Length: 348
Length: 259
Image (cartoon, rainbow over all chains, first blue to last red; front, side, top):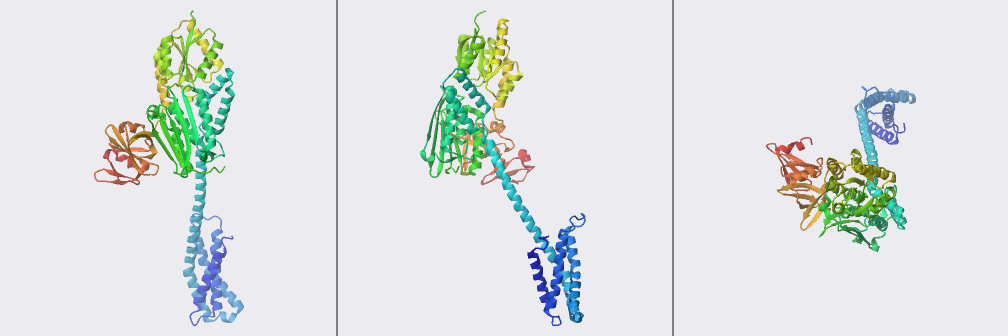
């Protein structure tokens, strides 16, 4: 109900009625202005009352009767009703002057004006209102959609990060079991590495970012596990500039590059090779380079790329296109993967 | 009966030792005569030692365990050892081949050993695995190779790099090679050469993303801005941010009919 008789609407009706009343005062035969304006306002208020009433009541309408038609009909009926009301009020105040020719003419003029303009004003008000309503709704939709999109992105990010492969896990566990069975003192250290790896690789629900230093530790845990599994085939070196240590690193970024180098470079190679990881910062951008001397792209065939494709997608989501991933072949063999993205201090 | 002998092939040394140790517990007469680090070594050592039984890891660098098995044939009893991998395990579970899943469980190993002892005692020949291995190779290949290409290997000047297929605008056939027009990270159009004929590439591309529009053109549908009709049942493809226009020949016009 508050909406139906809002202040804006009431003020508009009062303003327009006063205007009509003032105009009706202009002919020399017209009654005094307080009478014409008073009458016009009475008619205007009746019209607003009808407009607002039928806007809300009855709650349900038969399908053949659109609400706007009802509202316009309401306004058309309200105008003569308002006029009669105005006239009876006039009579109650001053019965003589109410019967004067001038006042009667004025009322007829007002009636004609009301019937001519009232429905159009009502229609205009309805259109405006519909417009505001539509805009409101569009805004709500927009908000909901962007919220949904953000949630979808979040979910997608988490899915993309969740990639502990059972193959890796069980093979590593088989090695741990072998060490434990053999009573090797190495077993505990290997388990520590595996725990460090799993802690980071199992999808983290809240941590959206880690520091470069933390990511590097994860990579070290992973590479040490792999080195235990293939001691004669894998060497590695990790280097990180001190300036880059506290920078933000989207989770699993570096690890994905390194896993890719192991899976598609070192593992398929009989002789194995080395992996060199360098992280640095230059001109406000973080540069990551992972070089391996494995079998290279040609030999690794079509299996290459699932991890890298999801990494690309993740970087796209995280930096909105401001990240670059390059893969080049190096001589005599191996692959160099270079990634750079805006350097941001870690906020966590 | 002479002492039974075995070969163990696995690229992970700890796992070779572990299997040898476990075998010693359940089958003390068995003598492990050789340990191989990859498929090629497994073949060489098999030829050198001629063991009765070969334990072959499926995923090994160079030649795989399955390839080594194909070489060995029926000259030894074969037991495959596979990492936990849904597809590989499924492939084995369907056949009659002996297999163990890592980490190897002692009970499972004991069952396998009992079966092997039975075969050796009865002097049964090894299973004829030729057809089974053939099947295995194809089913493993199918599960490992992604159905569509995500990156293409292309030469840009002197360097060879991988280009994500999403970055490709279109491909043009150049006889034995394919020219690829793609966007670098800055969104600038670049060109590179792929040393694969277009025909071969098409088969590997995602058909919902790439469409052949002409005998020598394949276009990334995401790069298309609009298509204009020409006379005589032909059309032209206009690309986003490109002045170049690609021809659509009559036989490929159907690609855009629904759009």
